[in-house]
Length: 311
Image 1 (tube, one colour):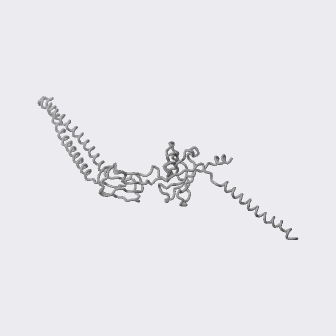
Image 2 (cartoon, rainbow, N blue to C red; image 1 turned 60 degrees about the vertical axis):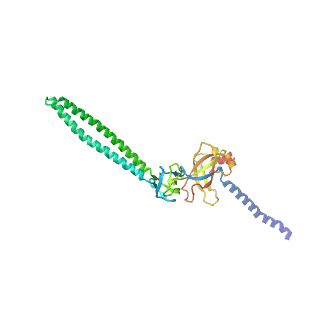
Image 3 (spheres, rainbow, N blue to C red; image 1 turned 90 degrees about the vertical axis):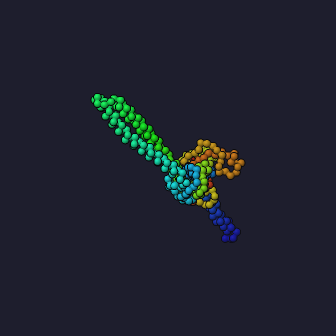
């Protein structure tokens, strides 16, 4: 057998693996295309907490006397965060307490006098009825008892008003302290001891409530019809840090269009209309996922919808 006759055989032997390799590559590409995820929509979003951050101002104007927390501290509901100078409010409470005690003492005294006047009036009335006493004296004693009864009723009303005044003074004293409304973490503190603050002067503290993390995504108006409540989605870190993909589902979709808050280009932001879409994580996200972090939300198409689109 000559070398020239061997060439076609060698060519055939070499061609078979090449054809197999080509068919294998085509099959891999087709398989990869078949397994590639199909997204019904893609939107920008940011990590948030339900209700957003809490911005707390001091309830009253005054001078900061004491600050009991620092940035980064975890606080519980009802815990005192800061206290204003309480001396004026304490003086008001003391004055209200003295006024209430005076009104109560006056009422006690009138009760004793009224009891004695009523007994005297009863005796004089009985004596007059028996002919052993003066009827005018009995009438005078009865009038005196009625007058004391009116004074006692007035004293009771004064005591009630004093009690309300004391309650109001104690309430104002309590308003000199700022307390945490929920369990939260102190994110920012913007006051110092000795500073004069106002209830209208901006937040004294910014709190991050210890609630479930959510994603607020901005659905472009062209994608609104493709997303529905309960729809599954993937949340990808927009910074390219390589953080793991997190799974979430659509919790609710807004009903009002508005400008984009995440678009940086002012021209695009002015001409783009979006609807807010809130997503809840399927599993608690890692602590590294921070509030305000920007993400990309990829809404996974339903199996039925994907099948229809493939046809």
